[in-house]
Amino acid sequence: MKIIKELIPYLVIILVVLVIRTFVITPIVVQGESMVPTLAGDEVMILKKYDTSYERFDIVVVNKTVEGDNLIKRVIGLPGETIRYTDGKLYINDKVVKDKYAYGITNDFREVELGEDEYFVMGDNRAISLDSRALGIIKHEEIEGTVGIVIYPFNKIGKVK
Image (tube, rainbow, N blue to C red; front, side, top):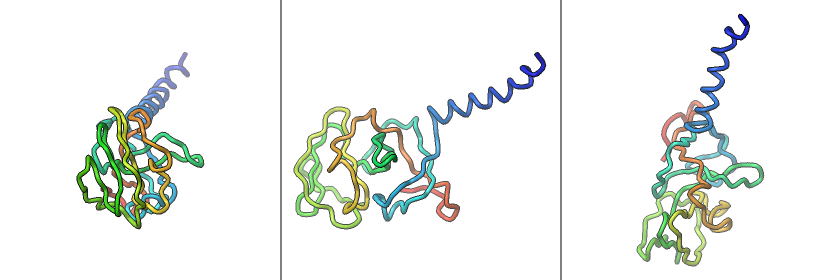
């Protein structure tokens, strides 16, 4: 009985850590170069799972595994919008929107109409990014949360936009 009493604090700590990692925050490692120059790869970031209202240009983690990794992309199109690239310009609901995060050439693509719970995501490094242009639209429930804070490497600690 004494051993059980001694183990209870450790079990509580394990339970609290599991709850926090499952529902609140967890570390995530950036893989690949699709978010260059914003994220170069191998950075460790904090994934905020409780943040479920996504805005244009938020960086999100999408629960679609490609080569064993979740995707880290930027929200470009929001629910109910139409989005397209024509002549190298981003159009949302037929209005040009400055795409200040685009790196490299973004090939034109036809208009995509998003439903009530659908998002269009793209990597910042448009020439090599595997994103909504190839994978299709992303449902709200496929987004695990937002990232915006780098915690490693130590020389890059801080907010990312």
